[in-house]
Each structure stands twice: as structure tokens, then as C-alpha cells.
Length: 191
Image (cartoon, rainbow, N blue to C red; front, top):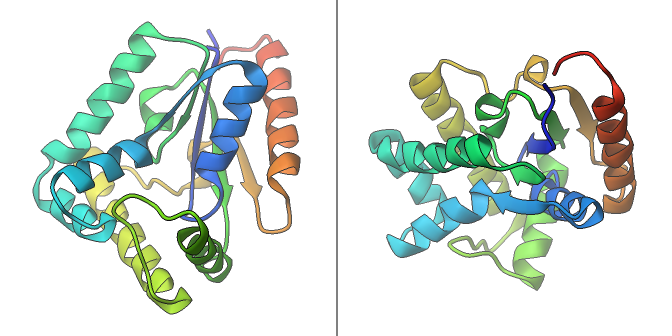
């Protein structure tokens, strides 16, 4: 049976967190971000997000802790919007969304966000530095999740819906996903 849960994954800078927060607000659901939790763990260890990713390749307990939290949420909760690279795997009866964005646009967006708002355990002096960090993080995550769970976390076949956010505003993407969620929930076939 389909659950009142939306999981939002995607490439760095694609708007996962912003979109998930907007969806949660529009639906009156609770929002959880694995990325925020991962940044919090990095800050607690005095590491940058990039260093934390490399550390997680050697210390599997980091990913396992976050994943256990997702599994527990799925076991006990509904009315959730989760932004996470792996929630689609742990929450199979959710609407599984993947947001995609090319690396150049992603680097520009992330750099602008870092300059205006900042992010816990993340900083950069240039767009090129962000681009290198995105690639390093992506490569690290692919290695980790392939080793831990034998999955390709960016395979579009893992998701119900894939949306390119390059030429779509947050409002447009949110409206698209709200419509998709409502249609998905109304569809009587099992999730």
C-alpha cells in the first residue's frame, strides 16, 4: 500500500532540500534531511562535508547510523517528506523523486548559496572549487553505496519521477511534484 511519504533524491545543487521543505510545507508533512544530519555529524567531528564523505568510505557506521534513522522513520511515521540520497531504498512505498542538474549549473548554485547563506561544514572560495567538491562527493557516495548496498544511487530506474531543475523555478518544481504526488496517491495500483 502506498504511504504518505515522498522521498527526494538528486544530484548536488539540484534543489533537494529546498524542494523537500516546500513540499512538506504545502502538504503539512514533516520534513527530514539526511544531508543536514550528515553535515551535523561532520561538524561534531570537526570535518568538512568532503572530508566526512571520505571518512564515511572507511567508517561505515556513519552511513549506517543515518540509514537506521531513515528505516525507523519509515517503520513508525507517515506524512513525511525526506530529502536523502538513499531514502528511496528504505522507503519503498513512497513516491520516489530524483532531481537532476548539470554539474556546472549545480556548482554555480551551490557557490551562490554558500556566499549568501553558508552551510554547516561546507565552504568554498570559487565556483571551480565547488565543482571539484561536487565531483569528489558524488564519486565517494557512489563508491560507498555500491559497497554497502550494491546500488547505483543515481539510476533513474530507482525512481517514480525524474525532474531536471535547470530551467524550472522552485515554485514550478514544487507544483509539478505536488500534482505528481496527488496523482500517484489516487492511482489504485500498489506502490
